Image (cartoon, rainbow, N blue to C red; front, side, top):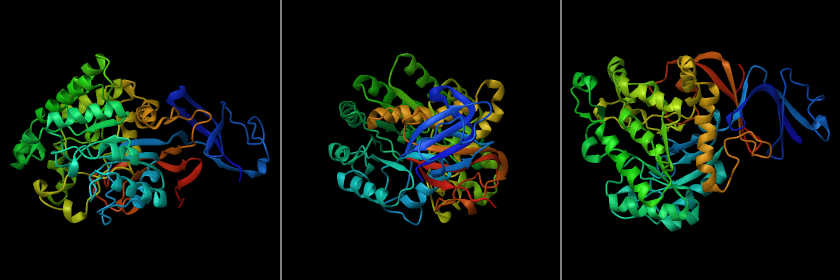
Length: 452
């Protein structure tokens, strides 16, 4: 076949302010043409296909939504090191099933991605088995130990696009300052895990009523906001591009808002679990499931969740990232304080976040804005680093990285259907609406939902 036609879908592309029914033509891995019409033409009329129409593979996606492939700046693929939890093959299969076409994978592998050798190992494995585009994130410090800088130059030459000690905080301000100066000169993104280790260590839950009810020492929101403010100041001093990972508190949202008002190159993400869950949800879970709710930073209060949603609507929170963190069942089926922090999200992020559109429709949070937070804005952040101006968009000539989302079906999240090797999420059993039916990466079908 010489091309692919997606016919009759609702085309949603915030980068072009498009939200209309139409057809989309793919040729040679790129978007060749978009035809917008209230009554979509057949593939043999209206839309100029060029060449032999019989060589066009036609998919009727009427009733579904055609959107740019989602982009996730924050995932953990556990490869190399923990293949029983996840591999590049299984993690990227989960990404494709979730509508993602580009992801960044964090450095807390085994061995840690703190050298060019490990970076090349990851990229070699991606070239062999990845279903979507993967860009590695290098460690800021050797072994994520916070003592000395990693081989930043070697990793950049090897192919990293960002640096982060995510999973750990770089507590040493001088080290982070030097890393940010390097990042500013090398056009590399700095992704910051903002939790003051002295205020958060051995405090796995938010400081509040839920912590008191469980008899667990709670972490103050100050643990996040102190580091957010410090890292913003360091970015301002160095000119580094700073991305703040998994923001969870109202205080941090306010700090980011003020930084953006000063014109700083700051971006921030929130996760589906921090937007949709709160600390009190831990109390309502069965005791054997409470470990599934443990994440770092912890789930926060109703007040914080409301502030995150407001920040997402207004754009202070630029994007949604999954922080996909696979763990084994035996690592999560433990008392809350003993469970490993983290949950998976690539398979199910869009259906989960589609609930935000439903519940906030009176607050002017539209599906187009959701696509902007999950595709267009991450693409704008990543594009300059990669030297690409066409990420997270359906513009003609852009890579045909596309997801097709059917908003109609209601279904219950079932871990048996995950592509991820791990199943650690408390969202299992939750009713959601809408699901990805197809994902294309560079015009090639990376995922297609099988019809029953």
